[in-house]
Image 1 (cartoon, helix red, strand yellow):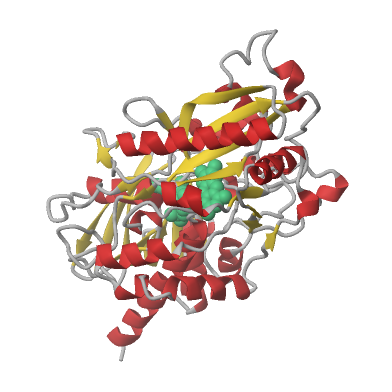
Image 2 (tube, rainbow, N blue to C red):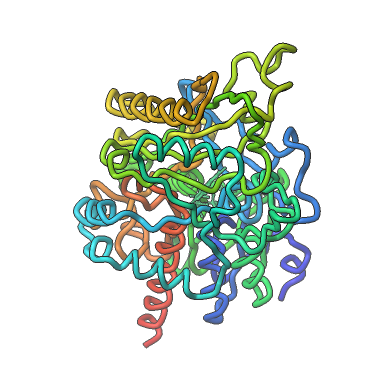
Length: 477
Ligand SMILES: Cc1cc2nc3c(=O)[nH]c(=O)nc-3n(C[C@H](O)[C@H](O)[C@H](O)COP(=O)(O)OP(=O)(O)OC[C@H]3O[C@@H](n4cnc5c(N)ncnc54)[C@H](O)[C@@H]3O)c2cc1C
């Protein structure tokens, strides 16, 4: 091991560089390190841990790109993505869903990749859940807080089905008064099964070097390797690698490839960008709800009629920042915050069908172009009506639909597929036309998955690692 690697500096060379230290990067790192590869992970964000995650809420922007203030180019939607070692898995809700069957079939048809539609994704998801590599549980009814109880009662009164959510967590100790609302700013109990606590921790124990605060600008494939240009604490550096695995998320991976000039050869690069637009609504009840207490997000709709219309509902966490974003008068003395305990909340999440675009600006920054189509607006309105019916049936006095829309699921930009005119990455997880550039993250999604994406991100990363290892075996056979 060289000195620069030990000190957390960017090394001059590495066998394999993994760009991005989030959900997919952690999983691939663990697999490749276990197979004996010498891996370096470059992560743009800082390294935080359970003992120093930033509190209070105002400071938690540090865990996100653009301080949590990344907007689409029309200013109408905030897009959240984690920027820290562990990536979005440090700040997410860790909810686990298997890709719906219709999505798997659609992806196979869209990409020409048979295994995407033949049940493989479901099998890989089950194997991951059974592998013991991370803890997970279906949140018990007993853990439903006042917000979730009202959501379930309202759903039942309308004849709609609800389900308990499945979460990647260990013991959240709700019974001891643990308010999980904290964990969106990093879990202080080490219960949430982020990549930081699971795959990356194990990969580091096996020899992975993680260098944080390294922003990868672009890369270039030459005979025998890849040259990466990076900025490390404002200093420009170059490093050589035998192979690169891009795991920088939808926006990060796409932007690196765009800055590297691949758009002219791959016209689909930056296209097929989806976000699952999310809309929050809140309601005030006569009695305290205490939506900030206990398991903050434990139930969702499981209603075929909603799925058929292209939306789903979940009860949401209610930190004051969410209330402030949702209610127009929350900053005023007569606003909601004095009766904060009386408010409940729910989100509508839309499966968007109108693709957006990721563009890089002349200075190398990103511009996110995304509009709601008339069909998406209709889904939002139908979802809001259903939420209002739920709140009303549970006895709400006042209902407010938030003005802001939010995305916590940026997807696509470097879609998988067999046709290089309509996709960016081949079924072997290599960039079309490249030998040593692999992609393993959520940028691969051909369209909006229609459920929480994280488990499918892990499935694709698992397949990408399988492919990488098989290619290496073939090369050395
Ligand atoms: C608030 C929030 C809540 C969510 N809740 C859920 C949920 O409950 N369930 C679920 O399934 N999904 C959820 N998600 C989405 C899920 O976390 C992501 O889909 C998933 O983490 C994507 O994995 P990834 O590896 O592609 O990207 P990420 O996990 O985002 O990791 C990408 C990493 O790459 C780094 N990076 C980017 N660009 C560069 C660069 N140029 N150089 C170096 N590093 C770079 C980033 O800083 C980041 O750390 C949520 C996301 C957020 C933000």
